[in-house]
Structures are given as structure tokens and as C-alpha cells.
Image (cartoon, rainbow, N blue to C red; front, side):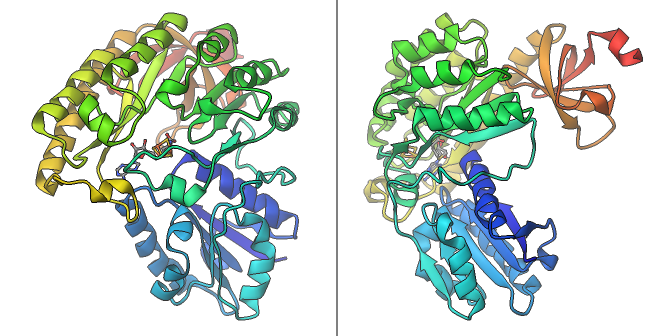
Length: 436
Ligand code: SAH
Ligand code: F3S
């Protein structure tokens, strides 16, 4: 049987897409291997959101092409494949296949053609494509990513995603419910619903509020997460559904991008600073104790020191639990590349450092205040180092604590005993269970 190796870069949707590809190829008799040197087919699932992500993949390709076996196939899939298309074949002569996010159904055929010596590119958008008939092959049973929406119809001026993932489309609610029901009957208790603007979910009949309630009702589903919502796509109905559906976790990743209304406008985000703060207030009001994380870009064209200070002030005001922070990276073909007043790299770098320090400082303060509190965690496995278990709270905090392997996959109550500033040490509350 042919062996397939997939390496995944970028966001959770790419992780879910790799599981889909394993499903497509599994049906054709491919078996998975964790060793690229043993593989007949090596696929690299890529991200195009920042130049840095692409450079990382290119240097990794340099290593993988040396491992290629005679008759083996090397493919680049995902957003960078979609963005560069045939240019990737020119750039890396050992690459046989270039396939974008809507082309995974064709992988078996494309691989067969590559084996026959053909080099192929498949980068057509298929707005009907949901891979509805493909059962994903998932890495773990404990928690599952479930794609509910593909593509993006927004046009944030910095963002390449609409060009790499095509138009927005939502899966039918019944199909999502069927998949999650199957997962739950296989023992999965936590699902993360995925979409680029997941709360604009709309299958023609049902909206995001319907979706949350329907998934939250499925027997065996104990935790529902979703990522990433667009700040102004939370309807009152959606916020009410979050508050009233016990399984929906008290954490929202709410990308703000900038704290300056002037910059937000140039980014073509559909809210200003005040509107974002209103959304934060509505979420906090409806879901007490909700944790909020975000994405922030610094050095967007035209960003002044005052704009940047607005971002720092917003970070302090909202007191995010965590933030992914990025230096603006111009993406070919996006509107922002035509904006004037680029921010010098050194200035952007310096702002990024200040922002990272501010985010860390605020997160630490929030987390220190949580030491001593008790939380339910889903036990995900052993921590990378040491012999502690690693669990995750409903608010998406990570706790390390002692316990037996038998707890993995289950839920425990723990008390936080300390924090590094971002993660926690903890003790299980149920000491009898430790002995037993
Ligand atoms: N709607 C998607 C966004 C995908 S991109 C989602 O929220 O899942 C993920 C993050 O990368 C964005 O929120 C943004 O902060 C960052 N990003 C996107 N394009 C970028 C660029 N050109 N330069 C720097 N950061 C970027
Ligand atoms: Fe990108 Fe904006 Fe869509 S960040 S993915 S264009 S919502």
C-alpha cells in the first residue's frame, strides 16, 4: 500500500484540511506514515498569510526534496499552492503537484498522473466544494476540528485569504450535525467549529445562532468552541445562543487587528474602535468570565506612533487573555500594497516588541489573579516535558498537573497553584481519584 506523509503549516483550517486529504487518500488505500523518508507521497500543506510562513515552507521544501524516493511524489497544497500555482513548479523543480484548497478531491488522480511523470497544477475555485462525502482521518479522538464554512467574502486590505480560499460558503446545518453526532458516538466530547468568519455562518436556512444551539444539543458534546468570528458579525441572537448553550465555552478569539479607527478604516475592517469595544462589552455582559484573545497587526501602511498607542491602549482596556501579534507583511495583489506611507521595518519591529511586552504583562496580571481558582479541564495528554498531564479549561487556559494516563480524554476539576504568566500548574481536586 502506498504511504502518505503530510506536513501542515498555518491555521486550524489547514489542520482540518490535512485530515480531509488523509480521508480522500485513505479511501484509495493510502496509509499514513510519520516519516517523510518512508513515504511514497509527501504533501506540504501551506499558509500564505505572511511572507515568513512561505519562506519557512520553501526552506523545508529544500530538505524534503532530498528525501524524495525514486518514483516518489512531492506535492505542495494549501494557500501558498493556490497563490503561486505553476510558479511553484518553476521555483522547486522537484515538486510534482500544486493543489489549492478546493482541489483535494482530485488528489488521487493527480498523484497517479505525477507518478506517470506529469507535473500538475490544480488551483480552480469550486464554490460548491464542501468535501461532504469525505470522512476526515483525525489525529485524536478527544477534540475535533469541524469545518462549517470555507472561503471568505470579506476584503480586508492586508489579507490574501480571499484570494487563496475563494468565496465564502457554509455547510448545511444537517451535515454539520451529522458529522458531530458521529464524532460524539466515537467518544469525542469537544468540537471546534471552523470558518474564516465563522459567525457569518449561513446555510440559507440557519444562521450561527442556530448552529451553536444545534451542535450544543448533541448528546455527548460537552464543549463547543469556534474560530474565528468577525467582530461585527455577532448578532444578538448569536450572543444569546452562546450564553444559553451550556456546552459553548467561555472563550472567544476576536481578531481586532488595530486599536486605531483610522487604521481599521484603511484595513477595510467593518468596525471602528468604539464598535469593537461594544462587541467586547456585549460578550462580557452575556457570558461572565469569558476569556478574550485576539490578532493584532503592527506596521500597517500609514500607522503612526499615535495609531500604535491606540492599539496599546486598547490592549490594556480590553485586557486580552492572549494575542497573536504580527508585523504587517505585504501580500502580492492585495489592496494594501497600493497604500502610501509604508512603515519602516525597524519601526514596525520596535512596535511589535512593545506590543508583545504589553500583551504579556496584561496576560500575566490576569493569570496571576486566577491562581487559587478551580477549573474543569479536558485532559489532552502528557505535557511535552516532565511527567505531568496537560489539560485545557473552558476559557482555553492550559494547566499542568499530576495524574495517571487513565485520565487522558476525560474531564477533571483542578485548582491552579501557580502560573508562568501564560500557563498554569495545578492540582487535581479529586484526591481520592489520584489514589484510586
Ligand atoms: N479571518 C481569518 C483570518 C486569517 S489570517 C481568521 O480570523 O481566522 C489570521 C491572522 O493573520 C489575521 O487575523 C491577521 O492578524 C494576520 N494577517 C493576515 N494577513 C496579514 C498580513 N498581510 N500581514 C500580517 N499579518 C496578517
Ligand atoms: Fe482575511 Fe479579513 Fe477574511 S482577515 S480571512 S479577509 S475576514
